[in-house]
Image (tube, rainbow, N blue to C red; front, side, top):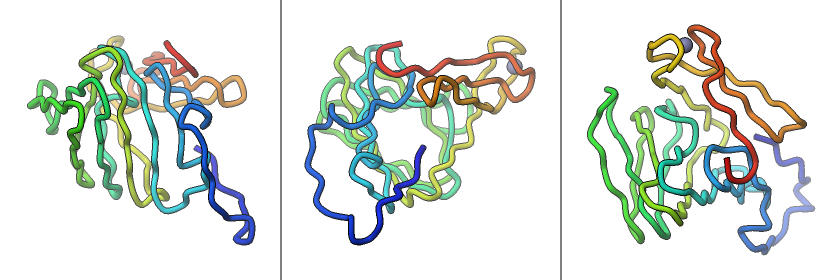
Length: 174
Ligand SMILES: [Zn+2]
């Protein structure tokens, strides 16, 4: 979510443990923002730790101009692909990868406890997502607005149709 403000002559090797990267608000147990931690500018690189049933990251969405690879290190992802609710579900297991081209809709859910996924996407500057999820309050498929609370520690998602709170993303396990 933040811009790298490192000047060119400050850019250098950065070597760190994944779990020492900033843990961003998410619906998963952890979302380590490696890209932010190392100052990557051209591509996104996030590592998510998730338990069964947790959504990565904000629900059914697509990126109009941004491509992604999900690489599952452990556990399993169930990825609904396609524009319709109840779309086809792909099972992506450990040591498997899934390429998501720009403009294609997906909704990824951890299918096992102990799921660890690397998500790489580019270009980083166009990582904005168009979310369309079913709203429990108004019953419609709607977009999401969001607000940042507690100095960036909580993201609150609202239904763009009826304004009901849809999800509350926190740092660490939900
Ligand atoms: Zn709604």
